[in-house]
Image 1 (cartoon, one colour):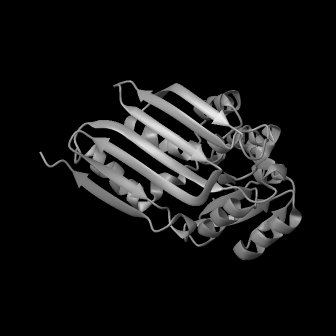
Image 2: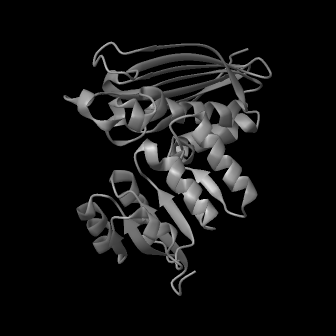
Length: 273
């Protein structure tokens, strides 16, 4: 820990990593010590805004003695590698979703975390949207009765040339829209319902003809028989987020996430009888 508080290291200085670094730099209990990105200009930009040291080797972040916690915000192919190394170095970790490209990489991170005293979290930030938080509180408190099912629609339109971006390369991304946005919905499903089993699923690559999916349709069931239905899409030409939570006495509907997804709202609907 530094004199200024918890020492933060950042690996990956793209949009999310830079955002996390800025938040940490503005927290009086934290100090951004070092930021790494293989694109040195991005690391330098974050460093200049936070007072950190800029490097291109993520190993320098993991090994820095003043770093207590590391934000891992790389492409998916490096998430588990960097996170596991950070844990083994005794650093707390905030790893951006989806945590890994596949189950096996995720299990290695979990195993390392269980053997350590480190706090390891995954950046499922949708839980912190005010409307989602309030809906979960109401559902857990019994406002709409026993939960029956959840339904989520989430997506955006892919950009021109999307097929040439790293997200379309399974070696880098591990998958398409399911790991990009759908994973947020699955996390919310589990927050409301607990552990789930996949009942049925369909993926497509209708538009970009890439080796990863541009749409995913999935049906899940909880141990109590509740259902969660997901459609996540890169062909949602007008950005959309909609999460519906139905109970036997009413329903909660969250629409929007702000910015291009529209104003975030929570609507409570109750049975008439």
